[in-house]
Length: 347
Image (cartoon, rainbow, N blue to C red; front, side, top):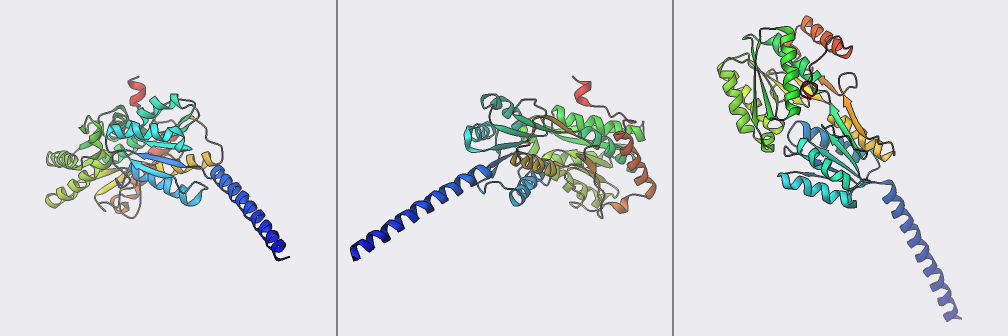
């Protein structure tokens, strides 16, 4: 009798274990299906560059908190050019549901590898590669640069302003063309000096060199510098603080994120790219099976670029200047002002 009861209990126990195993397997399968793994590849500046990469990381981190994505989602930072293609190839072999690559160098490598993995989905940030499995997020930086160029000309006392780019590539030349055009829209006689940190990818992470360039510009009489150099830009912020110890009224214009807080009162404004919002939006689209591909361009009209105006710089502007700035922005949106585009001019 006891033996029969034991057999009965053992049978019930075995069935329970089997059922629990099935339920667990189904739950795991459901989680695996519903919680895709997102992989983010940052450029050399890294997530603490207070600029482009940091914004991409913030969009990714927000998605991890607010969206149904796998806890195994991760980000990596490219430290040298070989890292980039190795990361992309590894992630493309089935490890990641969606791969997001930031920056010019990563985008070039994705363009090469994407053709070998047609089922893999990619998002490129700040690039224009038209492939059926790639969403290319392209910002109309020339529009934002035109506006901050106009601001620089409004505030310059010396009629000399400067531009410091990171790596000398078409993307950064596009910034410069817009900046120069905006400045000359306000003052046709203004002198605009253009220079770059370097010609290799290390130019994005060389703040020492950027500081040297910026100090040389300030010493020559330039009183406003627009810097578009990734993590190297931080060196130019050190330079504006140093320059103002000797002579007041030297300013800098930040890039990508709102950098007004880095040197309050010395940052005229920042030319923002809404990278965080567009990265989050892309991940959300992917989780909802709505990820469209192709090149998507975000300018003023689409909320992709803007100028920063907050408590850190509002004392630098008069009401009539703010009115003029917003008028220029409105006329760019309405196509009354046609901003020169380096890509179109140098097709």
